[in-house]
Length: 362
Ligand SMILES: *Cc1c(COP(=O)(O)O)cnc(C)c1O
Image 1 (cartoon, rainbow, N blue to C red):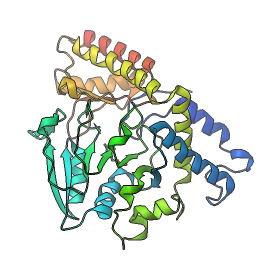
Image 2 (cartoon, helix red, strand yellow):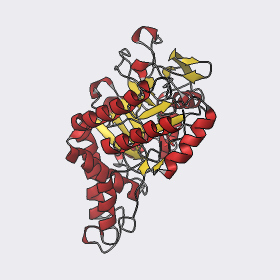
Image 3 (cartoon, rainbow, N blue to C red):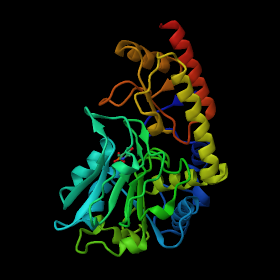
Image 4 (cartoon, helix red, strand yellow):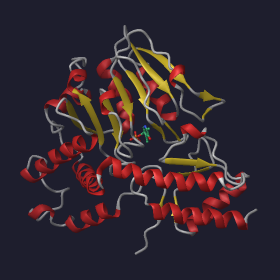
């Protein structure tokens, strides 16, 4: 068996320990004589695991009982519509901070439901190379919520400070950096994340929402698009994505075993330092287009001297067992997605490949 160094942007690498545990339990989960995919979602075993995953999520995030954990489907992309559908009306305004591709996708959906005020926008010539500074953020007078994206997966930028966003509820799309570092949970009223980057497989989207924010939702929504349905039924109104939630549960256990967010942050800090140092010390051979104080710890993007060399880099990396390094089709270049499951050793091996490639392709 050969496992590659997987820098895919999403779905992405999972911790080896999680995969091995799932493998060992595949045929007989918790003594049921069935896999977790085959048991009833109304059964005791499933119910226990489902609630354990919710509890673990709260524990890792440092969320008290004023928070509800919801397991939704349809990816983070469905949240782009579900959020305004639940909170925004034609006569009201929601504020959005535009920092990349996914922020723009969220804005597009919100506009269907009400007014959108762009509180800050760092797009320049079709690309985003930085996060706005605090003094660039101009909030509207009474928004129903303020939406931000903590990490911009495609452009490789990430908030390296937590902005002050006034008194309205703050909602954050944390899909690509959730649980990669501690975060000030008290600043938010809702966070959401598609699981397939840092939490598990695709198929489940975790939504954490404060009870007092939940009180403000619109009524008379389609049942499956109302946050209340999930909150009031512990996300068991209909059949949840059982297998995805099971892997999520194992991944959350793994995060706890590593030592929680402080321990995870230390590892992620080291990984990004090694990688950005290799880029910055390459005498301009590798070049990161992102401004230094906006660089992402999760998605490290860089360019080579020519597109031909980039193409060659992708090909030879693959031959060397390093996959998923091609930048998003909208921006080109190279991207290493180094989520929680990628190790310091993976990054060091990749840097050794980069150094070698540079020498051979001057
Ligand atoms: C990947 C990603 C999305 C889209 O997620 P889906 O689950 O595919 O809908 C949204 N926001 C961010 C920040 C992402 O990284």
